[in-house]
Length: 142
Ligand code: TYC
Image 1: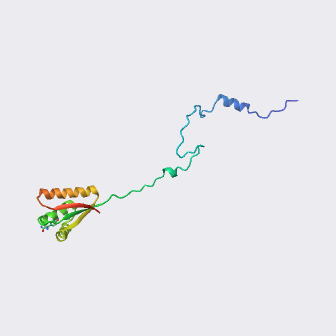
Image 2: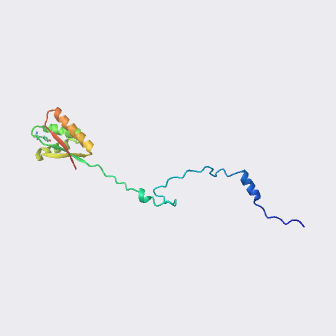
Image 3: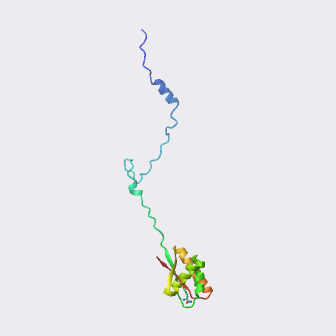
C-alpha cells in the first residue's frame, strides 16, 4: 500500500523566505521620538486643530488726508501749479480747490497711505520754501 499523500506542505515556502529575506523589512531600530503636542501617551494623535488653527485678520492700513492751508501771501497761480504738479489735478480742478482754500481756509487735496501723504507734504513744503512762499501743507489721519 502506498504511503498516504501528504497535503502540500509549507516547508517549501518557508525555505524560499529564509534565502530571500524581505528587503523592505526595517533592520535598524529607530530611536523613539518625543511625543508631539497633540499626541496622547498611547501614541494616538488628538485634534491638532484646537492648538494650531489661527484666524488671519488682515487690516487695511490707515489713510491720511493731505490739506492745503490758506494764507495772505502765496499767489493763487502758485497754488494752482502745486495742485497740478503734485496732486495730478487738471487746471480747472486745481483752480476750484485753490478757490475753496482761499475762501474757507483749507481743503483736502488728496487721501493717501502714510508714506505717500508724507512725501506729498514734503514736496509741497520744499517747493513753496524754495519759491519763498509761506504756503502750508499738512496731513491728518482720516
Ligand atoms: N489767499 C491767497 C491770496 O489771496 C491765495 C491762496 C490760496 C493761498 C490757497 C494759499 O492754499 C492757498 N493770494
